[in-house]
Every structure is written in structure tokens, then in C-alpha cells.
Length: 506
Ligand code: NAD
Image (cartoon, rainbow, N blue to C red; front, side, top):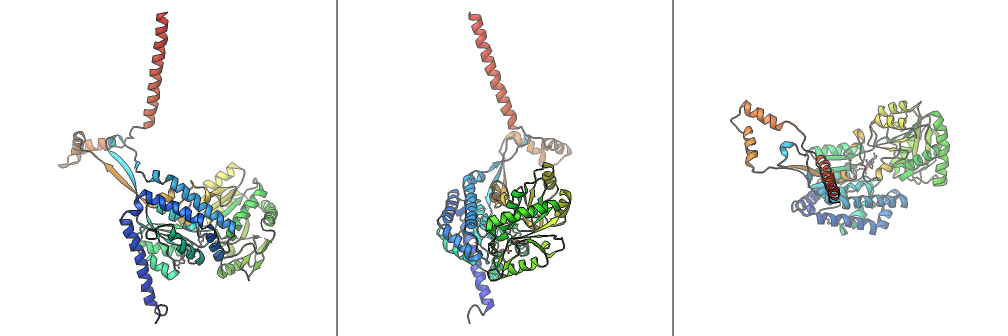
């Protein structure tokens, strides 16, 4: 009997394998390897080397799984490298203990916030941007954790490439790559982790959250949703159309922050469609096969979503090659199936509204999106939409671009996710902020301490309450102003004396 026709034996084998990986990583963490700053920096730099030296293999693996355009794959690598460089430049500073704000009563104490790594972290990536969704691995490494790296089983070529090449650059004990399908992933989720960072759909997100609950493991869920685009009549519609259609077609629309649907007035719709047609012709030369879809399941899903809609641009599909032409549909209503789920493909529905306030009401009737896009030159409209909606992030007058700004946190809210990464958040997510209060043995302080020792009395509590009452401590900015004043005073005094001396010696 082979392992495959004995499911219980197979399951036990996976369990042993997952236990082994996590236990080995935990032993390494406990020995303190990853806490060492030089070790962290060396591995982060090696990660960059891995990306630079294997660019061709990475691009080819993404093409094999997704038929991802070579240049889009290059951008994914570039974003990952930038993120790593940002971490390398800052990790020493972020790892130092922070000094906490002092009150008057704390003046003689030391108040610190330490940044302790959590232990063994699991990072689960998604298939659509297989490298980008593993970028949180680098934040966990910078923070001093061991990381189990779990690429999506839907991109096997990418996963195999990673499992083959990454151990040549990163310590495979502290940063193991785990490959496996659904059963293996569920076995992995049975293990105890100190943090789970998941990117993918909400259905599996709930499975991950349930598994994390067993040990109350903190979790980040990077999910998706329907990202609205509001186009105001004041916008430059030619540029707007180019930027929206680029965002919609990037990775064949299979991006978590792809614009999902457009809200605009009837008049704006008419002009937008004309410009969108021109932009698409420029981008793809009317090639109906420019947007390959990952698999049969998603291709058929998109085909079904298109049924019965009023196609105003594109609309052709190629079932032999699972391609969907960039498509714009109009006259869409909230009850159409295309408005019931995240589209995740190059189809853009337009819904007409009377003005920006109606657009905001429309957005607020749905779940909180991961991204919101506003196109306008009018600051009142822009601020109204930003202030009256809730979303993971907002880009004004462009699409997708907030993702690549290193200093802006990236993450969802509500059903589009919880937690975030990028910039300092990539580090903060994976550390515990440990409060450290350092007291001394001063006799004066001990006198005050006596007020809290038994035997209790209301007089002692009154004194204690007076001492503990919240009063802001001295602000160092006043010390700075005082020093400037003092230096000015001394200089003024010396100049005065100098001239006085000159005057009297004449
Ligand atoms: P997916 O199928 O790759 O699944 C995500 C992860 O879960 C993978 O590691 C996969 O191996 C694992 N998995 C899948 N099914 C499982 C199961 N039944 N049990 C245990 N593990 C399982 O990705 P997906 O869910 O199709 O991803 C698409 C979604 O991800 C979209 O909604 C998209 O918006 C979202 N997404 C979000 C972000 C973000 O940063 N917020 C980025 C990319 C994608």
C-alpha cells in the first residue's frame, strides 16, 4: 500500500513534516540566531541578491503559472527590492528601545519600549502577485523572527523555484519554504505560530483566523473586495481613462487593488468611454488576447459575470487560451452579479450617479473596500469623499500607486482585511512592544513609595493621589527655547560690555 491510498498515513506524514519544520525553526529562534542584528542584515541583503541574481527564473516561473507579462513581473521584483532596501536602511534604528514620554513623577526613572521579535511567523502568499504577497516575510525577518514561507499552491512553478533557490541565499532552518496544497496547508495551520500573516480571499481568511484562534495567535489578513473609482466632472478625463484602464488591466485585472467599478455622471461616462477606448487601443493594439486569466475556473467565472451586460468596449473572450479582452460595460445596476463579488479580471462596469454625494452613499452601502480611487481637480469633492468613506487606502487621481510608496502603510479594513505592512509597519507588525520601567534605590523615592505600603490610611492615599495625578513632564522643546534665550542673553551682555569698554577707554 502506498502513502497515497492510505490517507491517514499520508496525513500523519504531513503532520510530522510540519511539526518538524516549525520545531526546528523554534529551536533556532530560541538559540537567538535571528535576534542578532548582523544576522538579520546579512539575510535581508541576501534576499536582495536572490532577487537580483535570479530575476530570469522568477519571471519565467510567474509566466508559467500566470502568463504574467515579463515587464509586470520585473516591477514586482523592483517593488520587493525597494522594500528590502528601506528595511535595511532603518532596521537598526527601529530595533533600538524607544524612550517613552515622562511625567514629572517619572523623572528619575528609565522608561523604555523594547521591540521584541515574536518567535516563529507564518507568511502565506497568494497566487496573483506571488512575490509581492511574500514581501511581509522581509518585515518579519527584519524584526528578528524565524519565518515559515508558504507560497500559494495555485502557482506551483513559482513555489518550486522559491523552494529550490531561496535556501541558497537564506538560512533554510530559520526561513524554510513550505510547499503544499490545501491538506498540507491545513496541517501547517494546526501548528502553533507566534504570528500568522495571510494574503488571499476572505473565505480562506476565515479558515486561517479560526486556526489562529486555537492558540490566540495574532493575525494579519490581507484580503480583497470591490474597489470603487469615483470620477468627477472636473477631472482630466483623458488622463483619468488611461490611469483607470491601466490599473484595471495590470496583471489582467487580477490585483487586490485593481479598480473594480466606476461611479460617475451620465455626461462623464460618455467622455470616459471614448477616452478609455483610445487608451486601450494604444496599450494593447486591440489584441483580444492581451489579458490571460489564471485558470479555467476564473475564466468561466468572468465569462458568466459578463452575461446579459451592455458591453461598450471589448467583450471578446478566447476559451482556448483563457483570455478576456479588456472590457467596459455600462448601465450596470447594484443587483447585477458583477456587482455581487470582486471582479478580479479586466472587466470594468460603470454605474451612473447624479453627484459625488450619491457616489459616497453608494460606496457606503457596500463593504469597506481595500482601495478607493477619486479623480477630481476639486478639493471640496476630494475631501468630502475621503472624509465620508472608509477604505484600506486612497489614491487621488491615479490607481494602484499608493501600494508602492514605502512610507504609506498598506492594508484593509472591515471585510477587506485587518492589519497592515510596508514602511515601519512591516517591522512593527512582527514585534512585541515590551514596556520596561527602570527604578532606582533612591531614599527620597522610597519615602514616596512608603505611601503605597500597608498599613493603609486615607492620608497616605491622599498624598499618593497627589503624587500620581497626571501632570505632563517637562517638554525638552522648552529647554531648547531657554538655551537659545540664555545664549542670546550672554552674547548681548558681552557685546554691550565690549562697546561700553570702548566708550570709556576713548
Ligand atoms: P490563493 O488561492 O492563492 O489562497 C491564498 C493562500 O491560502 C494560499 O497560500 C493558498 O495556498 C492557501 N489556501 C487556499 N485555499 C485554502 C484552503 N482551503 N485551506 C487552507 N489554505 C488555503 O488566493 P485567493 O484566495 O484566490 O486570492 C485572491 C484574493 O486575494 C483576492 O480576493 C484578492 O483581492 C486577495 N489579495 C489581497 C491582497 C492584499 O494585499 N490585500 C493581495 C493579493 C490578493
